[in-house]
Amino acid sequence: MKAIPTLVRVFASLSLLTLGGGMAAFPELKHQTVDVHRWLTPSQLDYLFSVGQMAPGPNMMMIASIGEWVAGLPGAIAVVIAFLAPTSALVFIVGRLWIRLAKWRWMTAIQRGLRPVAIGLLLAGCVTFGQGAVTDWITAFVAMVAFVIVLRSRINPAFVVMAGAIVGVLVYLR
Amino acid sequence: MTGPHVLDRRAVVAAPEAARDVTIGRIFAAFLLIGATSFGGGVIAHLRTNLVARRRWVDDKTFLELLAIGQTVPGLIAVNLAILVGDRLHGVAGAIAAIAGLCLPGAALMYGVAIGYRLNGERVLLAAGLEGVAAAALGLIVATTFQLGRKSLTQPSDLAFILLTIAGVNRLHLSEPLVLVVVGLLAICWNRPR
Image (cartoon, rainbow over all chains, first blue to last red; front, side, top):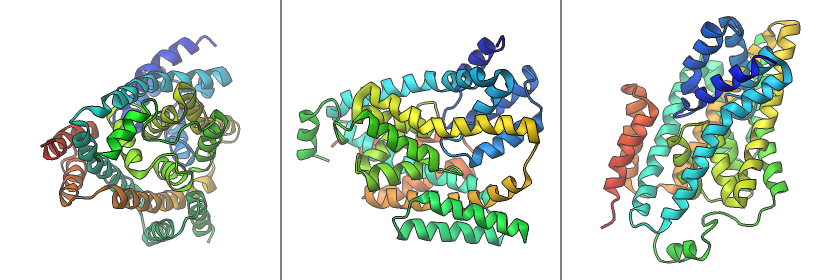
């Protein structure tokens, strides 16, 4: 329980480093939790991180396991709230300002201009993610099939990803 | 983006680009479903499927616009997007319901994983499943990006800005916020009011 104020301080500062997404804060998260506070070993963090990649929801929810590791359930709750609150308040305010600026004559230009950049950033993320995810012809095949199914049908994407998990396990057990 | 669109914005100042009067319970339930089923990443894809294609709470153009805000401000992009959509659907309470629903399942699962890991150590089968999940999630994100682009990009110049963005991140290895600001400013000037 004594660790909770420290947990809150560390994760609230990490929150502000997540410019461009949660992954941006990972190097500093590793530094703080492994080197500075010695809450976990590097291999423990890597394991929790890779499981966290598979977990549903936003990609950094593995911070809940660090909170649990250090201070049980109160630790997990404190860490998640400390990590989400600062940037959530910020994006809320920016979102409200955005509505206020709706009638500004530059707004259409900003909306049109940002759309292709948002798409470009998503695709750039796909390239980075793909370099780790496609390791052989089986994973390449799974990615292609998932692409076609999602594009052609209205199936809930969760089923496509679960099918991918089954293929991964079957290939391992073969 | 002229005429009726502007009138529409004036008519409903509080929540211009989204469905209105969606109840807190429905917002929480919708985001909880996304938060519980978006295995392996690609939450943005699940958000689009559920919020745009199925429920029609926002359209593709608004979704992309809010996504761009979410990418610019620090924070987890999916969480930022949830806040912006939640606010437009039901104000502060809508935003809180959206974050809570989206984050609860993953955080609870990772809380359980931490306990399981301490008691049992690593799970090899889990790692094997992870590979298939990552590959399928990749296909899913590419497909969703394709759908978003098809419906909201209208001019040839858009393609140039997409390629510039990818080149900046993947070729020049610049940070994403920097690329967003530089290419974003270029694209805004290109589309400047005349």
